[in-house]
Image: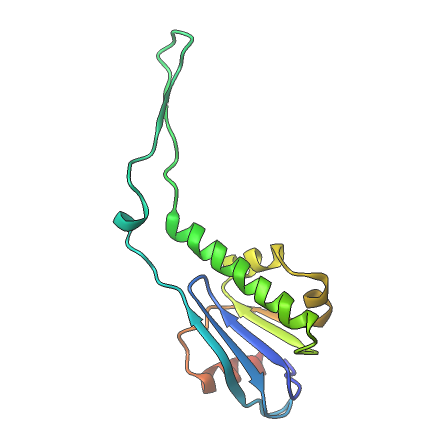
Amino acid sequence: MQVPHNTFVVVADGKKMLFFRNEGDSEYPKLEVERKREQEDAADRDQKTDGPGRTFDSSGGAGRSAYEEVDFHQLAEDRFAQETAELLKTRALSNDFESLIIVAPPRTLGELRKYYHKEVEKRLTGEIAKDLTGHPVPEIEKILQAA
């Protein structure tokens, strides 16, 4: 994938976002960190107070059902993706970038897409469905080149 000079590259998952700027050229990207943010991942016991609810059939039948338990970690990751999309919108509206590449795991990428503003979509030049938040910058650069 071509990563032109000054391209804005976002590497994110549901808990961490890294904003890079390509200070190199399209052949040899050199990503410089502009912003880094991590979300705390609270333990289950700190996020919920009770087990899932139950419902009973009031028509006299023997029907009984348990509700699916809420995945608070996933809800937090989805909210974090929404916040990331909001930051991208703000930066796009202030003309902070011309070209944007987003790298995120498939689920996070899907969540981000729900909230893309039209200005973000206009500037989006590529997406890579991979989790690279734990990778060193030189490895991210190589993966971008190879994509």
